[in-house]
Length: 378
Image 1 (tube, rainbow, N blue to C red):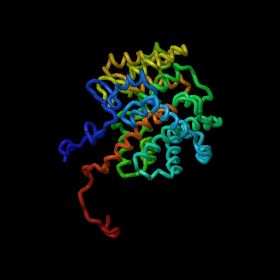
Image 2 (spheres, rainbow, N blue to C red):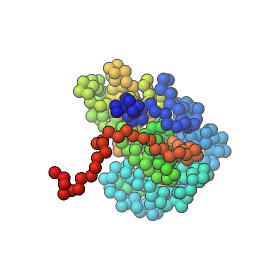
Image 3 (cartoon, rainbow, N blue to C red):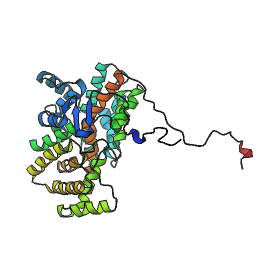
Image 4 (tube, rainbow, N blue to C red):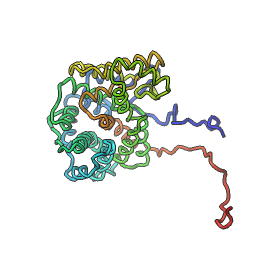
């Protein structure tokens, strides 16, 4: 039977598998909303903590609700001495995605509530994951450089605290704002590959930590979360704004894949990209270092002119993260930190009205046959 006759959708493209109230991507208008709010408006007017609260609870918080949320998140940031000792044993050359995946898995072993599935307990587990994952990422980053981890600061916001744990200081407001915007833009994106992975695992009634660990594994792939790393390597290979147009044209001529452009869902441009470009460039101008954004702008114009293909969020986030001082292979763990809010929201939504996700397949192998004893096989 042919694939078309069996109505097979490779990659599940175009297949609607369930409902969700968390976010909506509208390809025709290139728009993304979280719980009804346009993501670009959330980035302009809200902090990442407000957006995480919204994603979990369905409404933006009042001041009192946000204060309570922040107090709880900050109380969960520290890692146990046991996990800190375990992380010291990780290979120094391990990819940061392997570090965060293993660290999050260990959190599940430490949490005595890991197998409980009540909404109240799940919210607490989600909060622990949101709070502790940046601490794991920062500690892993420092340990591989031979530096001691820096304890989280309870008086700092989510984004400011991450800079503190990575570098021992908090940069200018323009830098923290650009980072916070990136966290908001990466926080949630409907049934993407890693989120669907999390929901599949959750549908088996596995615990939240298992579902999130699986999602991290899915995000590691360069066709999903790893794209922002590839973008920065490309910008470095181009090297100078004067070389960008020719580099892109040559790559197109030789059918070389250009990372950071196009999207499975968005056909007319990623709604998140302009906002990230805006705040990333503001930060670069403040730092008086716009070279990478200049290269990116020419590359973008060349791609749009030649192929009418627009950048996705990974394209502007790469130079922004690089200028913030983060190693390139840390870019995808930053994605993990943001998407933890979306993953955990989807896990809770899946478990609230669960059915085991178990699709069918079409067999294309050899027809049924009898086993011949080894003595009679020629």
